[in-house]
Image 1 (cartoon, rainbow over the protein chains, first blue to last red):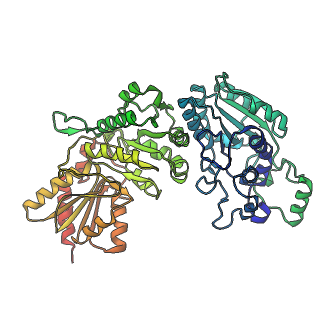
Image 2: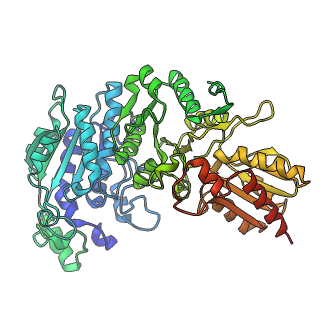
Length: 250
Length: 319
């Protein structure tokens, strides 16, 4: 997609792919034919720039034909560079600017709490994105309201657009921060489907706290020259690089 | 669901109307919830909280989350009324209003309380004279600036009935109930003509409408026939009423807002591109000096005398 569109954010796509695949094919309750079903589990893609991964998984989940992926970012495509709920079924809220997903997911989870509904709300943020203060506003409300029906997954690839997070505005100790905010924290290998499945599919009932899953990942996972390489936050492989990436990913 | 009972002076705080209406709507529709940022008292929602403790979400002093939680509640099937000081719900959370509400096109009602210069002496940080200019850029968001208690109640009802984003700008400044013909109705996007006139048209909204009516009376005594239009909806504009106003040959707009980009700017966009006639835009020039709201209105000519003067001067520019 990124190669065809000649733009995108492949590094973050690859760090999030295993998380998204685990959610859509092992955790979330949804019917792609009823994308606004009130009882569906909600997934909010806060790192909205990683549509390469998000759209691929939505297509594989049946929300739209996989053939449409080739229209990524073309004029009038429903596959905008950042997801739009009014174009594309399966998108819950329009993201792109960072730090928007968790606060919106908080509202969704509160609606579920008011109705005593049993749907769950999941939100995936990047780690650099946590530098946005809006996340921490929402973190307070989630803990205050004991939103056990809400799960935050942090794609902890330790790289933001320009440099390592710890060389920019450090986040560590990230787990302690979330605990201090009143959340239950789990640390997993974000490329290990079994570990992800284990923490994400466990019933939240009775936990009494929102869940934060810190998924340790690598930007550019699966493609040797992108692996943990800040240069691939956004970037487009040339023909040779594209063919190499496809060989390595198979 | 009628407007609040008259106070001794015959002037009303439109927040009472907002509160009474939202309580009545909530009785009838279980989807209605309120969302506040420690703004229960300033929104006059204390009684709502008593009646519906589980249907008020207080996120604390956190406006970005305030607005975003509104978007999330709508996703969860609620009809959220998000209520806080207009200066913060718009300026502090502008990107949430843009991305989470307007661009996502969700069914959220934003209630901008104590708008304009109601917080007079507290200064420009607490004034909200930029809100309409900011929000007017979101083409799918309805913007309503009610002028009196009846219209505030009607605007809240209309907002609840509309499926999509709406901003209602509520004032705490005392205003009288306007005189209207029996059976008057409020509809989003429709202006009302309160005084007929042929020499010029005053287009006002919010707290300025009763001042415009008073100015028209002053002018009538001099033999100047000034029409008064209450343009409560700033988006979408009632372009037919503006076209008719242009036929009077002179237009004066007046609003409790900056002269840049608000009601005056919106009307000017239509007038300039359809039937250009002399216009005058009355409002605040930008950040204002220290003073009470009433003092600021007088200082900047947003009163009966100032509006009448502007009409005389604009008529004089007719060719």
